[in-house]
Every structure is written in structure tokens, then in C-alpha cells.
Image (cartoon, rainbow, N blue to C red; front, side, top):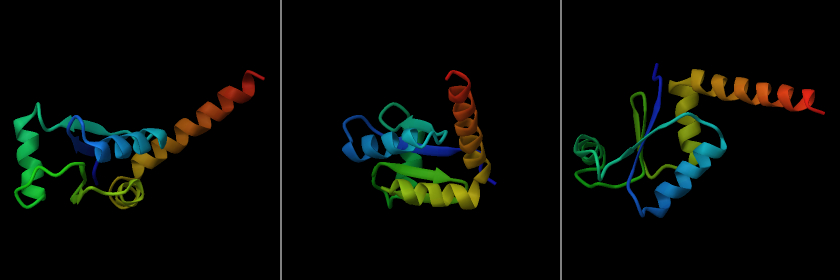
Length: 103
């Protein structure tokens, strides 16, 4: 099982920005790697994207996706790292309980 979602991105990429924002809104824990500052990460992306530095590229366990939708990432997490979604759900429950106590 995968224990993390790795999002490879680069500055100025609107597709990266949209995907990263969508995953943050879902409170999905990710590790974001800028391929312009990490040559090894750029090499990983090239190995996935047929020699191109196409981003966003996302890796969840043994699933690698180039320019995925947020839904595709969530589906991959469901199949390869469901414990991450459990953490998201637990966090949401804690926020709901906390909000309920303050009223």
C-alpha cells in the first residue's frame, strides 16, 4: 500500500495550481515536489511522461498519472492508499465536533 500522494509540479503551471488547490480543498495529504528545483524529481516525471516534463504528474503507490483530474487522484488513493482518506474523514469529524462545542 502507498503511504503518500506525490504531486510533481512547476511554478507557473495553471494545471498544477488547479489540481493542488482541489486536493488541498479535499484536505488530502500530499507531498508536492517542484521539478524545477529537484533534478531527481524531473527525471521521475520524464520516466513517467515519455521523456517529457509534463506536469502535474501524480504518483500514488504504483499508479502514475499525467495531468489527472482530482477525481482520478481520489480514485487512485481509494485503491492504493485508503488510509489517507480515513485520515481526511477523521479530521473532518474532529472539525465538526469542535465546531459543535463552540456553539
